[in-house]
Each structure stands twice: as C-alpha cells, then as structure tokens.
Length: 163
Image 1: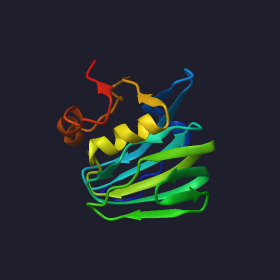
Image 2 (image 1 turned 90 degrees about the vertical axis):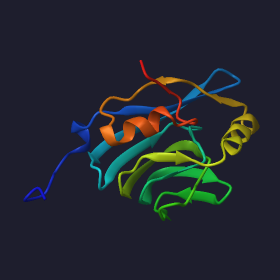
Image 3 (image 1 turned 180 degrees about the horizontal axis):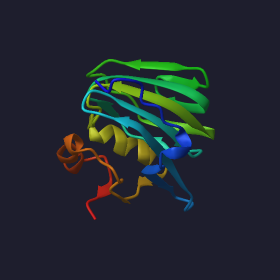
Image 4 (image 1 turned 60 degrees about the vertical axis):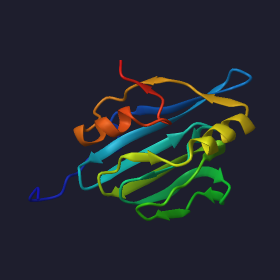
C-alpha cells in the first residue's frame, strides 16, 4: 500500500518502441508504449500504433482490458474502433491485430504481473506473410521489470535483442 494515489501524466512517461514491422515496399510501422505503472500485481499502459502496425497472437499473465481511444485495430474477430472495450481473462489469447489506416491509440490494464506469452507462433508467421510483412528486431526496452526479464528473453515472438 502506498498510502495514497499515484498520479502520473502521460507527458512524463517515456515512449518505448515495442514492435516494428517492415512491409515489402520498405515502409515500417511500430507500436509505441508508455508504461504508466508497473507492479508485480498490475500493469497500466498507453499504446500508440502507427497505421499498419501489428501485434502477434498472444496473451498476458492476468485479466486484461484495452479501451480504444482513437483509430482502430482489426483482427479475425472484427474491427475494434474508438470506444471499443476489449476484455480478456487470464489465459485468453488474442490477435494478431493490425492497426487501421489512421493507426490506433489505446489504454490498457492487466490485473496481474502482465508479462506476455505467445500462442501458436505459426499464426503470427502466417499473418505476417499474408500482409507481406516481417517483424524487425529492436533493442530491449528500458525499464523492464525484473519479474518479466526471463519470460521476455525466452519469448519466441518478441523480437528484442539483449544488447
């Protein structure tokens, strides 16, 4: 218990590049994330997706919500536009997702330690191939909490280098 509220402004939280996709024509699209709160009990984050940015087939350790604030994301489950609330219970898998032509901004919260786990990697590989895209490696984001580190290092879809 902190004894009171934790108040942060998005302007005071740094952006982290979480994924970068390159299309056949050479254009790239990334997902950018601000980790507002990181705790072994919960994660609060804000995402900004470039138009065409993609997220793999995955889940998170904990119940997870996303609220689409601006733009849209699309998956086999349909289009989630601004105002859509997405609820995922611990163990649910979702995606792959691709941002619409205006990109997407969303707020997310995971009630649990929040690290990601992957579903069937062939689903992600097929999605990339279908869209003429490849996932590019990125440096490890700064501020990875220690309770995520081993899970991230062994994640076959997250394309971060340890350097």
